[in-house]
Amino acid sequence: MSITVVGSLAYDRVKTPFGERERMLGGAATHFALAASFFEEVNVVGPVGDDFGSGDLEVLATRGTRIDDVERVEGGQTFFWHGEYGWDLNSRETLATELGVFAEFEPKLSDRSREADVLFLANIQPDLQRAVREQCAGARFSALDSMNLWIDTARDSLVGVIQRVDCLILNDAELRQLTEKPNLLSAAREVLSWGPRVVVAKQGEYGAALVTAESFFALPAYPLETVVDPTGAGDTFAGGFLGYVARRLSDGVDDSVLRQAMAYGTALASFNVEDFGTERMVGLSAEEIEARVAELRGFTHFEEASLAIE
Amino acid sequence: MSITVVGSLAYDRVKTPFGERERMLGGAATHFALAASFFEEVNVVGPVGDDFGSGDLEVLATRGTRIDDVERVEGGQTFFWHGEYGWDLNSRETLATELGVFAEFEPKLSDRSREADVLFLANIQPDLQRAVREQCAGARFSALDSMNLWIDTARDSLVGVIQRVDCLILNDAELRQLTEKPNLLSAAREVLSWGPRVVVAKQGEYGAALVTAESFFALPAYPLETVVDPTGAGDTFAGGFLGYVARRLSDGVDDSVLRQAMAYGTALASFNVEDFGTERMVGLSAEEIEARVAELRGFTHFEEASLAIE
Image: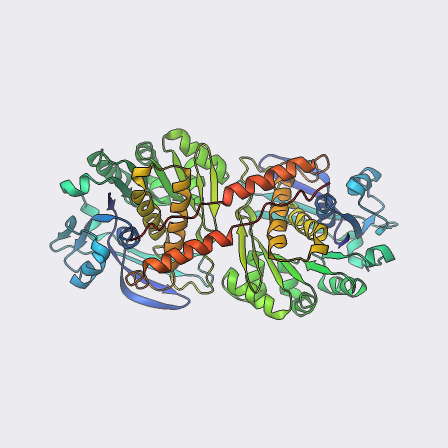
């Protein structure tokens, strides 16, 4: 099986209570690929400027990720984000966003990227997502992320592409904003009525919830005493989630597989936030991931109670 | 086994997106007792004014709760709270708080209340909590709730009484504020270093987490499409949690019992929020509670993954 992700490749300037980085490799497609590459071959589609370093291309290619469709725009500048987090990391302020080469981006997919079995449309302008979705018409499982900016400025386009994917992965506050439904379950059911059969609500430090027509599942974040940098946690989660889905695709993506995929996504995200940018993910081992998935089972298990009430 | 709760008996004026009530029975001790009374005998300790209706006393006495230590203050007015919730119920504004008889409250416990096996110090001034803790020196399991007001104005007193209980049950934002630690795990471990052996962080719509020296456990809130009134959810949770602990006290309050207690607390809280004030809790059945506890096991279960990563 193979996976295609379209999304940003970026340089981030980030300050958290644990330090700062002036210019580190980031972007949704980068974080996604570093997680999904543990499971299956990943094709990255996205533009960079000629300021994008060859060392960063090597990081992107970790674990065999294919970078043929990383388009280098001569004279262009790589997407740049500058943000700062509050003391408990639950709030963050965007201080600058420079679109650079993303302003003129028109996704051009090679045959290999087009023929992927699993597709992730990371958070970019919804019309671009739709163009890619149409190029990858044969994908057997497709998922999409978005953000409040597109809900505010391009809601119709966004709803249009959501109708064409199997799975929406969105922050829970944005899920409420998108649907104008006040809580998780009513918001998720609204999205299910549009077309997708799976909704994943990302809940930051509280973990994530999965809603289908038949089932509800929730998993806490892996508990850490120190979170160094939350940047990219959501895309890393998506990479673990869809990577596991791709690995199990021939078995059929049933409720059991989706729940396990949630656990892999959660475990991978927990490593991502332990250090700045991509620093923790490059050298991570499969054994470390498996160990956290097993721990997550323990963190959520309780024994059947003998009837306690008379 | 028996349980004593000291805390507020109140009238609440509440507005939510689903309606409003001008004056309904509320208060931490009320919500706690309506949940804990499913498990063991509850003694309620707290003051009311002579405006407190006999019908409301009857509600308080549901399922055999003892109201001998409900002190009626002649000429006094019952504690009154007026609040309004935002559209997604995650924000609320307090519009009025009238202490009434609570301003001069000095807890006086009967022998029966003093000799309870389990003690819950609901959110009241920490020096009052400490006075009750000392009167109930023989309690085999004691727990405490508090709020940001006391962290701001009486932190030393609050820490002093926390050192003398087995379990702290607190909103997660207040846990961070109390400990000045930026995340759940570091905050909980700080409290464990003070004396308690159990910390429960209430996380509102996200559920609750349990931290001990040896273990971490988290449970989502029971998913509802419509939450009518969140008032009292935390105290209802505490009533279900400590009610179950009391029921299992002779077995020893080990990790397995604490996790099941989290499930009963979570299930009970989910009923409480389905209607205004105490309206859903009075006629609730044991079978309804057991059914949601069983559902919660399903909502958090995932099968062991065959090693997915090569």
